[in-house]
Length: 358
Image (spheres, helix red, strand yellow):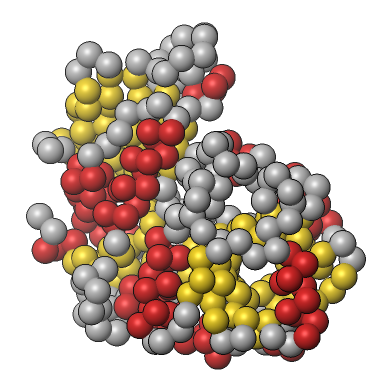
């Protein structure tokens, strides 16, 4: 894939070391763009100055929400190498999301090359302080100017980059979770397994509700019976019950997380039984009450691991592990972040040095 480059005439001032980066507050000097049309397919791959994208008011994404995205990170190792973590998995998931929404599918090799190229070009933006990284947001939207529900005849594929701080500045601490039994996130046959904006927009009402009640995140139940546990917030969720790990299966309503897959691999290597099956909320609450629920945590790119210290289901409160981060949860966090930042040997072929990917 040929990529042209237009250098920004004016460069931004980069955040100084020690500046709290937060999440998604700063953006780099350049972005990647590529067009797709029904007639020509993908064309005009380019790295250009970061800035507004011109859109027709009739652009179909604004009316019918054909839009998908991914979330991934680049890490600066202590020796200066810039590392990507399992980018091919994001590429494959992006294809599956686009296929479900009848959108153009970026080939895996082109997706990975686009990510590599723009990260390499902007590598000075990859922060070096402990726990920091460069967040990578690939996305695609329907750009055809038309009114009428049909697959768009043109799309724009883009990648923007944002240096981000440690998700937990004070360390990995448990959060309080509200079990949502009014709103639903997904049902089979829908778009629950995709990473599309509509899934996230429809989740905001439950998030606002939980925050008003003093809770950090929402634990989603299935959309049919409102009985089985599915995800927590925008993350996959796992429970350690009687020294076994239970997590919802990826059978159409749960996002197949890259972190989820990596955590399951590590757990199995460490000798744990991992059961990908439906867990009833009543059984989960009972396990919490009788002490067999030993640990609970969410998994995702942004936080890596998010320990759960409390559940509220219909006013019933369950405190998990005395509201402390469990030993297994901490070990998983330390191991996976160690691999991602190049501090622990990668025996799985997960980490890619961008300098060696050409």
